[in-house]
Image (spheres, rainbow, N blue to C red):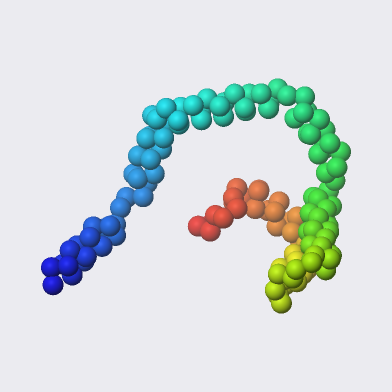
Length: 145
């Protein structure tokens, strides 16, 4: 029975409740203080500064501004259309591939297509709901309110 007490005490030691915030803070401190963490932080700063001043960023923003419709409902319709095109493309590519994945390979692309069509149909209410959430300061994933 010695192995039982050893196993039980090991499991209890490993599953003891921990202060998650303190553990996260400690891991963050270890990462910041390490040589790899400092190098990664410096690379991130250089990349961010380079991207902020780059010509490619200016061109990408100009293209995005030209392609993004002004009314919020139109932006939701564009997002829905992207989903429809992606889903139909996957369905068509699944038809011409030499080896089938399985009997339900059509299910996920069909769901993506249906979600895209639904997004296009519900663009008005979705844009109003998103504007309401922004006005109230509710972020995505915030369920406490």
